[in-house]
Image 1 (tube, rainbow over the protein chains, first blue to last red):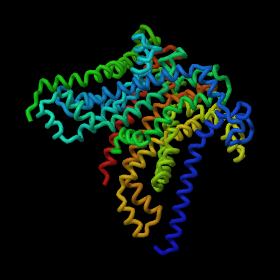
Image 2: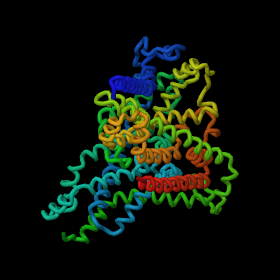
Image 3: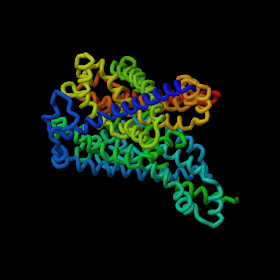
Image 4: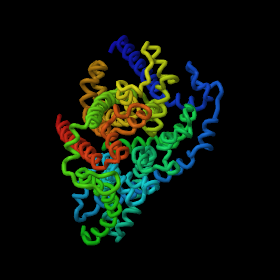
Length: 280
Length: 293
């Protein structure tokens, strides 16, 4: 390369980098704009010109949302159901994934095919029958009713199975030689090895469940049983057409998952690439 | 090694029991129930009467089904390929960066994906608000008349597709970045020794090597967008839901608004079959793509 072309390539490279950073800022701008708007008094929010920072910084909308609406209850419902979904999905999937990977038993292959097949079935088409089932079990407007139909996550089992498949057979054979029971092999040998995977899968399962809209929206009709994701869109009269108030409720609903992502960025990335079948 | 087969079977059954119980209850049973219900004239809750194929034969003459079907296809066309291309270009840009700057830029692009749909809805409903939205300044600047975007049938689907691409691109970006990282650096070094231009490097090296990931992203996006409901429902509130119907929305409307469980189940079966066909076709295509040298 001549110095001339090298300089041209560097210039082009710098331009692309600058453009990428610029695009990233524009991309995230609506989120910033939502947050900033929620910190302005209502009269400032509707001004006809753009102000990137509030004239008067106020937390009054947050105070209103937290004290005058049911957002606290919705938080509790969201936390309880998302934690429930996470624990049940991850634990049942880990046990099943371990059995399919390490043990030989009748119907093992059909079971595995069933799990692979369930990847294709969209849970959205089951809403009618889920609703009928939960109604017959008397579980509408309950945490259990919100949790149960959300437990179809075949991908978690597949990730566990693939993880267990990769563990060298020597570990198992050594433990079997020591006369360790199957359960203690799982709990003492395999589980400590996969804390990384378990953490990653738990975080994304929690985020998926927190963000779930369609089923929690159908399963609950009483405002005091709503999750926050549903609640902030359903109870408009509590907020009126106060834009800043609505936005402050939205910020409160998005805050826990955004925080979870920012704290565990690498784990979330790992779990998502794993779930798509790419070795992260 | 000697295996104690009976004990192993017993342990395996204990381990898979919770999973099998849950799957039987909320996956297998409802799926079978859906097929049975689709042949009945039944309210949402309560006994129905057997009507054979009637729920299906009514669909071709059903105008709302027609709207839902074509809107879904339209939405898929608007979101899948554009979303994948946008994610690919963003990933290419991000992969050039390094260290903290890369982490920061990736976080900015990825953050929307982590947010609940109702937050995304609030953000964009505000950004594109007819009277006060900051997005409307862009319209003014480009000399386009302001429009209440989500209240106009022509604008609705493209706008929701745009918001969906913004919301879900983060996921595809991650997959593309993983794919880009898997390409050995030596290949690029060799091509730069040959004085290959940026564009040649992309078309001759990056793109072919990235094709399997691209196919994966397209598949995931396609199946995801066929099942769209949340955004369409939320943005339709106060608008014209009957013009904006998509498949899942129509299932919801038939079952929960019209109290018509049987006909809702028939629509669900149609969507079910569409998704299965698309999945199988995709699977075959992917296998074909993998065999390509």
